[in-house]
Image 1 (cartoon, rainbow, N blue to C red):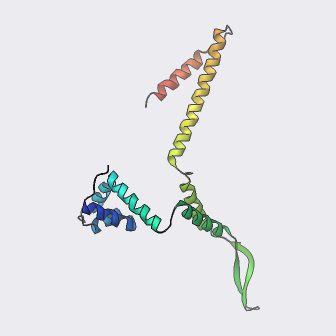
Image 2: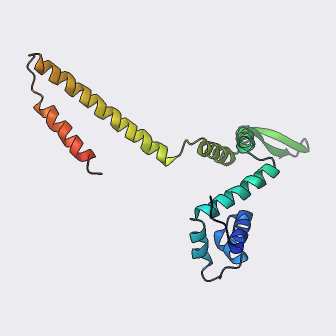
Image 3: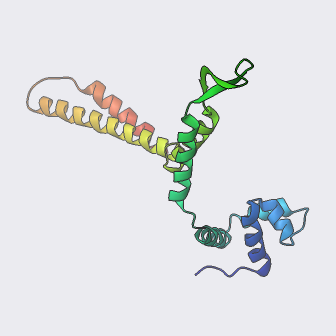
Length: 181
């Protein structure tokens, strides 16, 4: 059950979705101009405020028939259009008209920005993902080392002499390093 919003908080939510400017939303909702910035920051940490803002944004998107598919389709269209080579035109006084120069240009900025936004949407630039992948890589290395250690220890137990003291020291050091968290 979410905590009911005050009238002022409800007004803040409605004002906030206009331009996503917390300070201005707080002022328009009737909070003090002097403290509007900190008030907005405080309000935007409250789960019930965030939930209401999301409800209002979702309702607006539904009313406009906007969804992730629509946005991604538009971004793909922009990227594709921006990548099309456009001929550079130059006025030919002899012909009295614009003619192609043989050179071409494209909108690399538009293409890069659209592609970046698509990549962000699908999580390609999520820093958490990089940390998760790094943690997984470290975990795999640890498992490989433990597997190698177990193989060597098994050989030792079977009578195939091999000194594993160095490997044991490395594993112990690794365990101590990981337990520092």
